[in-house]
Image (cartoon, rainbow, N blue to C red; front, side):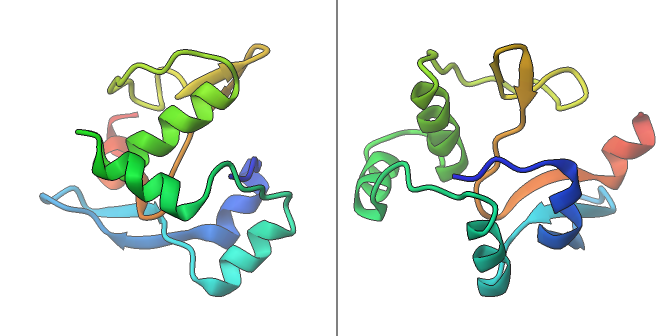
Amino acid sequence: MVETTESTMPFILKLDKASRGQGYSLRFCPNATQKTFLLTKGAKAICSKAYFDEMVKESKYNKGEIFEKMVTELYGQEWEKDNLPFTEGGDLEVYGKSYQIKFEKATFTNEKILARM
């Protein structure tokens, strides 16, 4: 897990084709170089890969949702699955600051969403 700011985004996001005719998307899909870069930003392990994989296997939720749950619980909060758009709020709020939580291959936004803003 790593906490970053918007200044990091140009170095870790990928322009990709969105699904279902939604234009292009911005995705968090880091390659090895980008992962190394994120390590310099204070990345820390919150569990082992084996534990994470087991949590995903035993759950009805996907990897991104399990990661969001783990981070939320790390901050002593109860996680609930929601579909709140980033334009309306973050995935997690800590001391009045909102955070978006993304796991590998996650979409930040797409052209269709941006056009509606």
